[in-house]
Length: 331
Image (cartoon, rainbow, N blue to C red; front, side):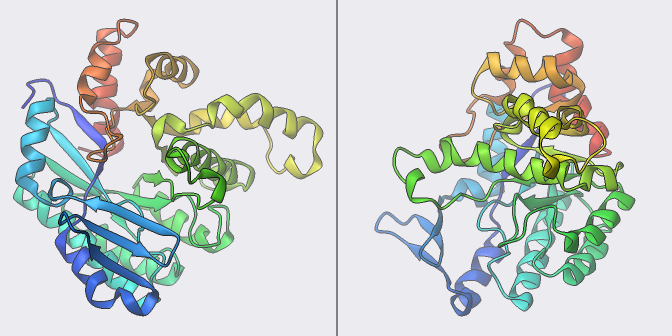
């Protein structure tokens, strides 16, 4: 383990209790857990969405801690990923959220210096989301809320989410977003569902938060955008032009590009030049280290991505590796 404190704020986790609930009860909502000939586990939601392979590295704490030690990562902030819980009916969605959040808290209690996590809420029902939010806000190890870039057919600007945003902000918990795969025929080849789909899905969600008035309505709400903000920052000129000339974009009082510093970001850009541009645009104080553990596209050396950037000062490296996240997550 590294002597210098480091935290990976984008590290995925599938507890056995979550997978078992889907295996036992998911079929009534069109979702199953399957295993292929090699023993790999997948979660299949209808015909459109398949998550996996969910290997033991996603589940087993020992394997995770060993890899963290190899990478020089002191702490993981655990988070779910697709298919989240929004595909489920209210009863199962709540049970999945409770199981996931309890598993995070148990992981933290077992390894308090190494593992914390972001709560999953059944956002498909705002009343239930608020109920679970109150419960998890008192659980050891919960340091934020995880949310997809859309909930079923509702965008993040949907007014049904506003009471939940208000309470999250009051509790001082940040929201960490993650894309749900865009299921479009044009993206099915060449892994474009991730290479192109995820970055633009993040940008779309952020635009709904900006133009939909969420960031204005809840100025204390902290929202982290994954994958270094996806495509959002390169669209800032286009968004500003729309705000300038289009009536339907005049829903906010200042240029959309001025909201970029309302968000925080992780380091997962896969390009030092792009990461440096992001730092120049929003400041090192808004960037936190992430890896996307443990998908095949993940950074294998997330700490070195930061330490080997010659353009960063020692202070900026420390900010990105630990200080920014420690302050945001109240560590």
